[in-house]
Length: 144
Image (cartoon, rainbow, N blue to C red; front, side, top):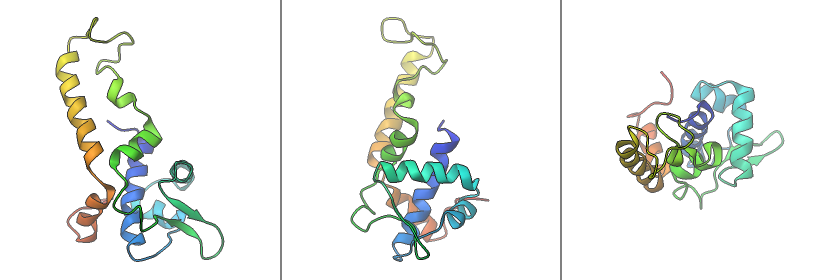
């Protein structure tokens, strides 16, 4: 459903929140290991999230990535998805047709529209902080 970049971006932010709650800055290497992702690819994703001001990057020996306390409970899943994948997931055709719309629908247009609308609602109302709670309590996992 999401691109691999978006998956890694979501996982990174969930992990960063658990560490930012402890007031820790986390290195690229540690993030990559924790979410089981390639370091160079994760670096590009994190740079994009920094550019979109969702996370902070500190340089130097005591540096790393961090989420500011004021943002911890404000970052929504839709913020990350939009920053990395854009809004194509909310507009695209389930069958990949270029000209799928209300006037010229594909065979699954109406059913997929309902799913897409529900997905958008879930992404727009779910915070990364909410998702991090299960991880913090050992109820959910970022890698197997």
